[in-house]
Length: 466
Image 1: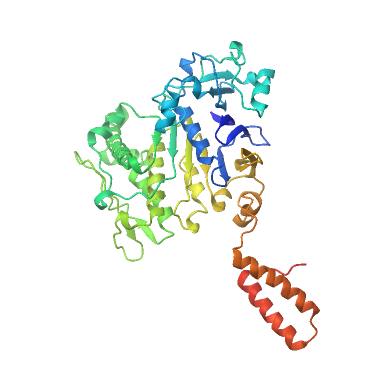
Image 2: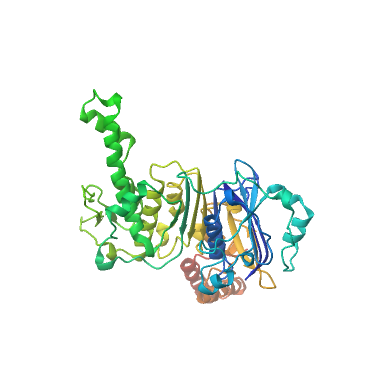
């Protein structure tokens, strides 16, 4: 199941916002989407509203209430059972105003906000077309689009162990208290055996959730191994044979995370020492990670790592634990500013690192970085901007995937120039020198001009204009 369209009316900078998310060649929603645009255009807002809508998703409780007022938020989903809209008007929910004052957002869990589900056929009605295309803010019409377009179950509900929703906001650097790793209890980890949640919030506030997941996966592997030993077909095998077969099909989580982390750590000359990483035994409740300087073997405390590396390995490691040894059928991963505090050299394959972990998941990214944006196809790259009235508009990208990030800055980010003030002055002087060289006949003077021209051209990599 994937999102193929977003509609927002009458909310802050979104007056009459419509965004189609489809591959122009196939007409299907893409697996990954990248939002770019200047500050204040609502990249983070869109991610948050999608997350909140998904968290209130429950098609089995589709008892429609009238969508009475603005704002109006609608998402079109493409699912195997058919396309449908999930629509929400927060003013129709009791307690909406109090939630706004407390900063909990449009439709937090505590509000129990109603969502109305419409069949995709509703798009063909005049009533829907007039409402979603009219730029004038207005209330939602009474009995909007009629009962015949209300979808009935089976509307998917995110309750299965094969469902996964992950929200990774842009937050400050993760520093661990007293230089130690997050602490959790074995009891907390073991509770995941009974109830593994669908929604996960990956941030500084809940670093302990990552450690809880690691301990759970270690303990689960121990339990799976004991069950494997008891299988009838293994009764006549040696312990060594059974163990070898089990290891082949059941990798250790720390080994897999170590491989992921080492792809990131090798560029700054670091390594995760998989062999010496501590694994909980019996009732031990915490894991210990080892990061070392690759050239010397010197252990490096986690808090001594750069802020970008700390965030990156924790977030990617946390995400990997959520997908580890699971068959996810419906997933959504929403990541805000994954580039935070990372050296540019680490960004060129960062999206590939995320994609190597996830499966059957629609991946949303909001970024200000052209290196990140260059890792998306033009139709996957959505530029948000303001129109003359100050409302948000959306256009697709232009430059091809993998293009020079400088081209993205100009053509997709709409940056007027990639040079600073001094660079622009040098460019003007470069052009002036070119004219003077052509018009000067005195040999010594021409040589001086050519020398200055070459110095500026070499320093700034300017090419002669035609």
